Length: 95
Picture 1 (cartoon, rainbow, N blue to C red):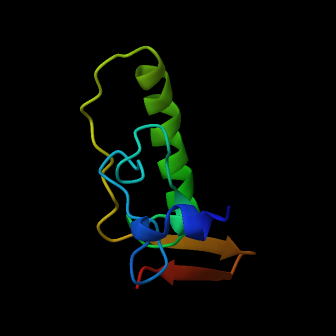
Picture 2 (tube, rainbow, N blue to C red):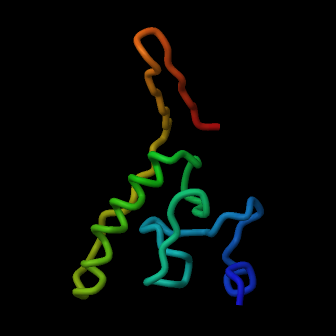
């Protein structure tokens, strides 16, 4: 089965998987969606890294049946800036 057929009801109109505030696919405690496939926030590589770090801390708590209450906090105004040499640079603002 394809991802699209198995989770069809969990995709939003933009083709992203709907997730809760713990980045779990709605209705599935042990399935997480991060990065571009997630509906949670802007699609930027460094945000996927933040999401991965959050999930990596959450999984051991779930495995040990420990409570977890800290929700993922999306960046309200994500910006990525990179320097290029001494006099240049490039940036990306969320849309």
